[in-house]
Image (tube, rainbow, N blue to C red; front, side, top):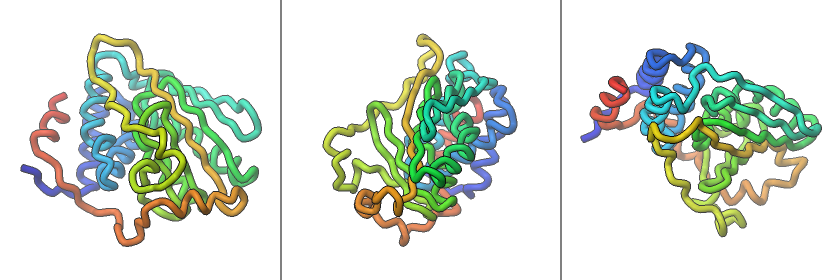
Length: 233
């Protein structure tokens, strides 16, 4: 049976559990926000289930809590972010100002994330890009593609409800296993920020479900057993 919890309380709990696992306060805050927003937006596979997995991966030594992130500009509108086998959300957060500024200047900018934890939909980063007046599209090598319209907070899966060309070849990605037997985290993703007016992307964005009638909830329902597992991980 699930119980209802305040979203801000869950975010604080997530941050505290991450710091107890050895994650710095700044990184823990970014990751906790991403987890909470994903859970609130219905992306439960990237919510508190992923938090439990990632804390275990930190304990196993496969996910580095103090990873050094490096940024490289490969072309005027292409940024490579090496997460150093650390948290995807924290690595992308370091590159967001550059990504947004470049997209505003060029009409579009792409971020290639490598050597990271499972990024999920990167809900926190997508919401920040949208708040800056840009749209965003996230693509994984296998699994869901996600998008968000400017000035919105809800991230939509392009292959669930969007009649786009991407839906023909994108499939659900299996969740990353929390096994202790494999090497450091090596997940990758491509995050594109774009100005719909300059790039004529309105047609793509018009296919997304309309989230205007679905405000971000202030509470979410979770199983107490899951929270207990996270606290004790």
